[in-house]
Length: 155
Image (cartoon, rainbow, N blue to C red; front, side):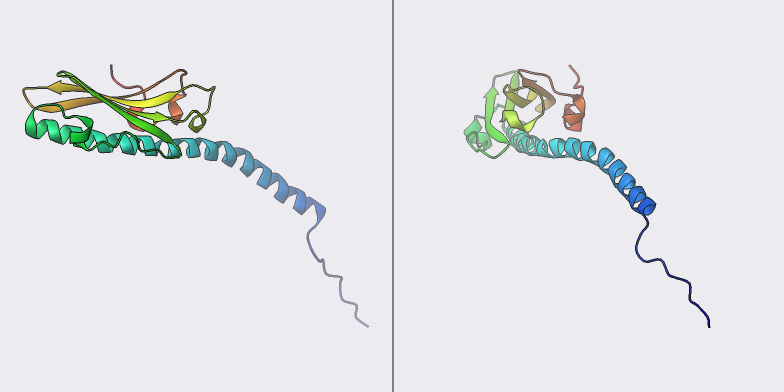
């Protein structure tokens, strides 16, 4: 009579422990990266609103030669979303400032109002505007959370 060898059924304890350790290591790496990514993703909305206003102001200035009012540029200053509280616009004969005010809970760190700001310097001879992006507010934010065009802006 031949006896069949008993077959192993299921996983051994060591195999299960190895799988749990691998999952733990992956979670330790992935969760912080995901949190950083989600903050940066939320910053795309204020930048999109600013880019929209920037394009309108630039086109108006290039074609007419004077800075427009918010209404002439078509800037919706009262639009509220989950991230952007409002848009502020100010223009003089030499410069333009567009701000996207964001809610405190959007970025990590202590409370305080923050806003992305586009500052435009007018050039009357070429009818162009040179734009600089900054983050204004009551508290500094790590550079890694900012959109690429707002990191370490030129003075």
